[in-house]
Length: 189
Image (cartoon, rainbow, N blue to C red; front, top):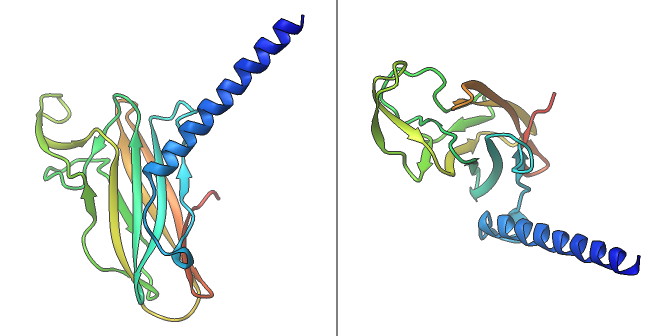
């Protein structure tokens, strides 16, 4: 009886160590060197522990003065993909990041994709042409400028069709500025 109990405890502790190592590895892979007073939490949608085909991470980095970098990282699970915003065709369900018009916040440049997807020919009847498929973990950066000193909340949406599930994913988020701190969070309402 004691051996059985000890074996179960040993197995359980090994599982905890494994999960801890995986969590630390995930944390280490998403670390950015940012001064302590500028750090903001990472917001995650979906997890690898669920059967979701992807995980989506949002983070806001302060660049300088009133400029910020909204960072969206999409971790794709095996065999999943979506159409890059760099695709030239007229595709429905292409990756888009929109921010509601506001006099408090403006986009400073185009959305930057890293690593940049590569155009490829897809013979599928719905495509039958060239498309930029995103098939690996990809980061999108959107530079923003705060245009006033007042506190605010601005809504936004990340939208794309995840393949092969063929579902339109819509992830609403909120960018808020409160008492000198800018942050982004998933809008769960």
